[in-house]
Amino acid sequence: MELLNPDQWVDKYADYLYNYTIVRVNDHIVAQDLISETFLAGLKSKNNFKGEATERTWLISILKRKIIDYYRKINSKKGKAEVHISYRDDDSEGDWLEENAADPFDKTAEDKMENRELGLAILECLDQLPEKQARIFKMKTVENFDTEAICKEYNITPSNLWVIIHRARKSLAECLEKNWFN
Amino acid sequence: MKFFLKCDDAAHVCDKTQYKEAGLFDKLMLKIHLLMCKLCRGYAKRNTKLTKTIQSADIKTLSPEEKERLKTRLQDEIENGYNS
Picture 1 (cartoon, chains in turn red, blue):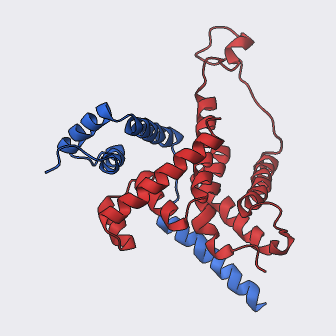
Picture 2 (cartoon, each protein chain N blue to C red; picture 1 turned 60 degrees about the horizontal axis):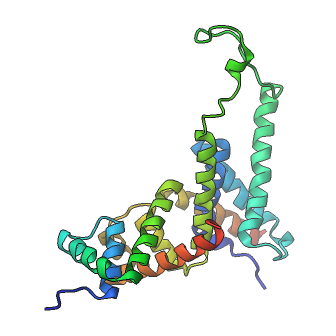
Picture 3 (cartoon, rainbow over the protein chains, first blue to last red; picture 1 turned 90 degrees about the vertical axis):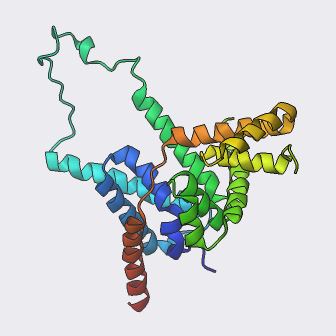
């Protein structure tokens, strides 16, 4: 029995893996390379997959190693992983170390991280919907395609589309209430 | 002509509102319906919350071309793997 379906990996997991990666490497091209490498590595070690985790969790575990490898590589290029702080630059008034410490009131980085986690939670919930429903919902809501364009692509009427959207929104709200808001 | 919306229609207009695709008249009818219908008020509240949640998540997606490139590369590898 085939436990994995590599044919569907890109459609099912590429966006999820991308959102996971981009917050960690912060580079669009690098993120795509890492995802591509993850898929290829997954393909190679296909036989090691025992079906204990979901396909996505398994791919994420591969991706994590790829991200670590990536940082090892760029660090070894530099020679060492050090943090350099210049104590005197033009903006600072003295050489107080406090000036260089993180500002506890600057929460944007943390918020960003939390939002990205939320994004992953949403994509995970979408994974539980019927595939076509999830894809149409994503096109409409995340990628902001016109109703008309989606109808054309999937050969459905606008009222079909709104029924699909309605069902997707209902399931998604339920799923998020269970997994995110609690 | 029915003046008041039924719950199904109200839900439909409410969904459209989430994408700013509801007309002015529909929105007015929805407002009136919501005044009278507690159940739909609950739905509308939840629906709006979902919209805000999704917006704040700022989900990134790869473009269709980028996905196609990933697919081609993966597909090549699958075929090579089966041949060797």
